[in-house]
View 1 (tube, rainbow, N blue to C red):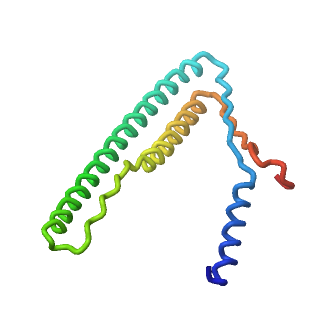
View 2: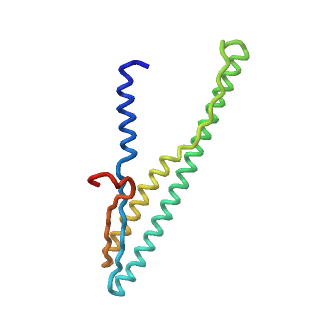
View 3: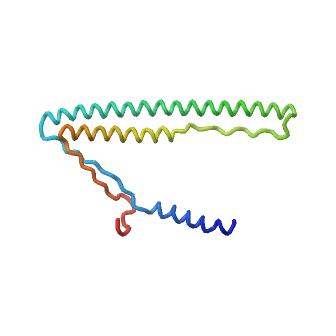
Length: 153
């Protein structure tokens, strides 16, 4: 290993270790309902809207995952077709080396899950706004939940 690379590896490793030890925070939400009946009836509409929003998120994630599966299957088929053509070239003596068998492409669900997280956050934000518009009070509290023992946190 080159001598110049060693300090960078140490710095990178140290930074990664410190990041894993840093305090982790989480925001908690508390809901206080409105005092009057009309406000509480209004909350039923908020709840219904939130339910519809979440159903929409679920449907979108399901469609995204199906699309990711289809893309992976298409890529696997393309790779296998290419491999078969290269194998025929090798067997016919037109290529010096046998082709490597293609690996399997897995569906990329990460982008679907990442999008779902953002959409779910929007559902919650819309619900909270509706809740407040009905006269309820929404309180957010951020607390340290891990690695809190460090000074200053």
